[in-house]
Length: 430
Image (cartoon, rainbow, N blue to C red; front, top):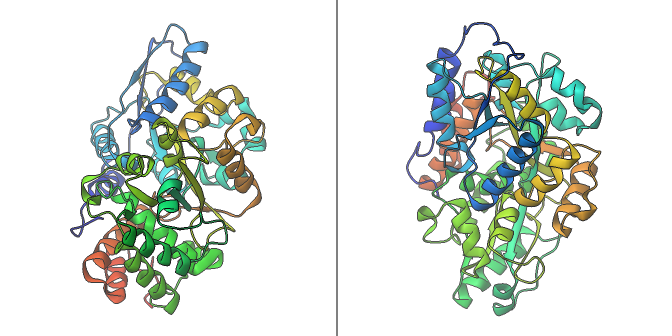
């Protein structure tokens, strides 16, 4: 769990500081100069993440054999450390050539501050405006221009479970019509059987916020999610209180050791049978496979209770620095990400699904094939936890409010904290 108020928010604060200090940089560095280097900053350091990043480097090396890519990855779930390191470098005018961020408000924020480069040339050369999922395409556009290249779409509203543990507890594996009352009843059965009911990588604060985010979506639905992103959700309504109360109930079943586990360690615990359930975006899928867990034998998945009709997306994006020292190589790296030849091996390693239409996913595992169908057939919603759907300041307030609720179990304290953390008028005073 998150623990103290404000814990894990340093990376969000760094972005807020960046909004003030990184403006007014000089014009773009030429993208025509030949160099022999490329620096890429990400937070992909777990087994599955590192393997996925290697597929992008491999694709780049094929077209740029004389260039040495530098892996400047910084460990920390959801970029908690990488974003702070990036903010410091941007403030000093020493950016990496390419860095990782998220879709929506995150990538648009860098574009607004002038720190990332217009990628129209990449999108035109790859025909990405016509092949990319329209919601995801819109999420990387600012003032009609694209500023980020998505690597794939992760589904966040997923519930993972260990099949032998459920069998031991006498529980039928859940399906897409799984309800919250049934979930809570099964968690109670698992606890009675002597196994940890719900794994959580609480050392990475985003995992606890994802747990609340999924619980909120299951309660307010798609229409409520759209109200929220339009700043029109009544945060003191009964349905939000219901979501918070359910979240509190779920916290009662989480791993007592959660504070000491990162997200990938928690996922490994699920793979090893140390817990029954885990709810997290399907980065967990890539990690489960990397841990030699077998889909349909060791583990399986369904949508988080009450969310089967939507795809809550977490979309990793790479951008190129306006002041990139190796700008030509940066654009070449980005141009190779969304080709079918790159998307398939990347998706296999990462657990995500391609965001462009011209990729044949029939060779991917069953889970990813089904996830891809959901991406292209269901409403796609953007995550608050990952800074996509709402502003950075709102995201900071969201994290802080979740932490406050964990400490107080008071719905009004949650709303008060959320409202005090954001700018006036961003959350309706209801």
